[in-house]
Length: 539
Image (cartoon, rainbow, N blue to C red; front, side, top):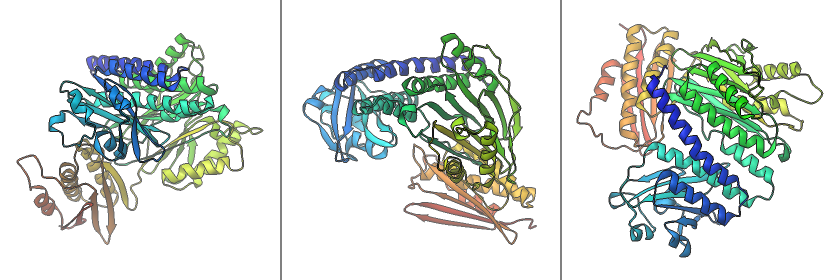
């Protein structure tokens, strides 16, 4: 995972610049302004940050089916004319319907329908728009435009989405009478919207607010994607409650991401965070930060005053990871944090959580840890179900005095059937091959068997990635079973077929059939299923 020094410096500079841009909008969003003044200021800053000519906000009306122009710069007539359109129609309507960013590089050649006549009247050539979402609810659309053709990059969309999150918070804030609701909305918006999917790995997370809104805190979790083979995992808790804690939580999470892309060692990341907190006189915060190598399954972690991670083995035995200690961030100690490393065995689970899960009035910390270990050992194997079961068991009948955040990380067991979802990206094929090899090895397969399935499954998944899906997020479902000595690998996509762009085509199916005893292909309107079968150990 080592990065080139020049690349490290460039990545760090970009991260710092992005933090500064987002902070400008965050400060405006949290200012005590009425809604009209607030949206005007936000759009001015969006135009300046992204160097565009227009910016507009459309909000979902009370009927939940229509978007209405609410504020605009460079397209002021959009608001003056009372522009409205149904969700699902036109550029903004498509963003609202899909809840995904939409880019139009050149309006004259775009297949996306444009319903707003002002775009052509004003001479807009390129557009980028993102959804405004708060706590899972769509509240509107933010889009920007350029008078000259422009190729908006992924980092432009990412930055506008971050800006849009803050815009959404600002709009929601104006609708709320209680400031603590704003703090809770801010906190939730800074948590990951979705957890990444990787072959061989299952993730789940929960955030449970305190019973009383007035004690909203700074609990958070995060999963950072460094590439197809590495993930960063974090759980943290800022001291205090209310708006200050929630705001600092967002700043701490952003700083964590900047440092995590700059250095590899978790201990060094926490050391940098601690130094930053000490210099700025920030509130104290506890944290566990870890990196996970998805090829070797090595988990390297460091701890800053946070509750110990809990490791649950495939045999349901449990133990706390107490190898490393360190004071909370911002304690003023100037501590240098160190890391420890373990290897996750197949089927092992690591639980990261905040103290609200184990601390109860009148009970000691050791009692809470024992209760968590017992609940985790008896919880369902599936991480999503485990989250719900553990939280229900530990909070049943109690008023939740503090927020609870929880992140569950599990390596897929290799006994029995193997089932997982793989991101439809070519860089995931290496992990797919390794996972199938490991599963086959545990089921008595020969090297020839392992090679055959690795080649055939790679071809099937590559076909799905190339043909069934266009740009955007998608997944391929993979399932491996063994019955009477015959291994079956089923690969299912849910995309719409499109013709391949490359000249070399049609080789995938013959390759699969050359290495398998049987290949079944079923193409339907909602996707394609490929079934690969081979008897293990056959001559």
